[in-house]
Image (cartoon, rainbow, N blue to C red; front, side, top):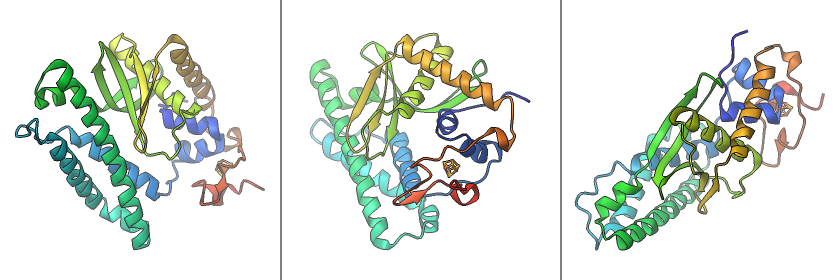
Length: 271
Ligand code: SF4
């Protein structure tokens, strides 16, 4: 068998339930779209394009207001662009309005944090809003691929700050905990970055859009976690693509109060 190309998502799926991995990454059965995915895509698209807005006419007196207005406008455009996908979800109008407003609040929360960071740079370094904005503009949506590890991933934002490199992923999660699956995702990004640039990022973290940025230091232990989990996954998935080798892990992630695993009907986990 040829070596599969894994990703943080596929490795986390494998760790959660091998049968789910089989359905999603070997049989490649379609997954079911939901509002959390669609609004996550809209939020990501907004933040990806935010730093392309033309701020040449912004001044010290109006950048706070103008950045907020630009963020709102961009978010609205991205929401409109996802119209067909939103329609497929068949949400009630009130539900769609709820998610629209909730996601807009997340974007405004992120914008407020950015403005705080801009304020700090402007007052500490005595630079213009344009220079401060340039300093905080990250490299966005960068794909990293490793032939050595046979893994790839898309990094939302890479910032060169405080003499180091920060790798950031955006999440719309209600829970602000850096749980194990998130830690592994960040560990894999760190390893991919290290392999390409021969330099370890100094910090890696999640911007929880309802809340704030949470960063953790990157050390050898984190990189080793990534190597170990990648190896364990390949050790299994490169050897077999037969259903029998991908057992079910029945847990509360099969079905919960408001939803179920995309493959629940086919899998029949209780049988
Ligand atoms: S329903 Fe449960 S056991 Fe079946 S694939 Fe999904 S997570 Fe795994």
